[in-house]
Length: 118
Image (cartoon, rainbow, N blue to C red; front, side, top):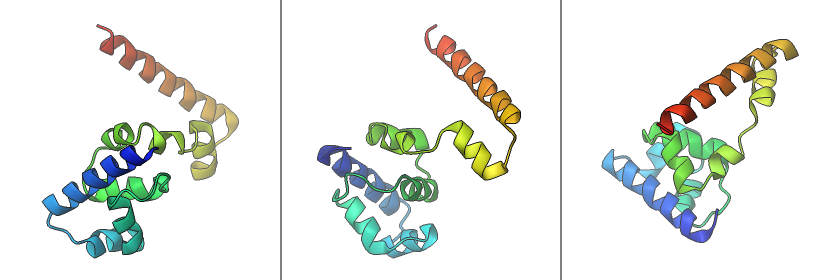
């Protein structure tokens, strides 16, 4: 993420936070992060903020993850683990079970692409 994207991200977060009438400290407390970190993000000072923190803040502020990803030009989604890694770590699934999940996700993605191309 470049500096312009960092500024755009900060503006998006600040607007959403203010629209909800929440303070920096309130949002930071809800997200379990330091309010100074959030303040720096809102001012566009971080070009590589932690995705898990951004995702949590976006959830608190009701910002759709895809909007956050658009503003950051893929920073959030590119730093998340892949499906295989996530399901293995989170649910301790067997390789065959993860294969089935991956195939299902691929089918959903193909279906979405077909609908978008209509």
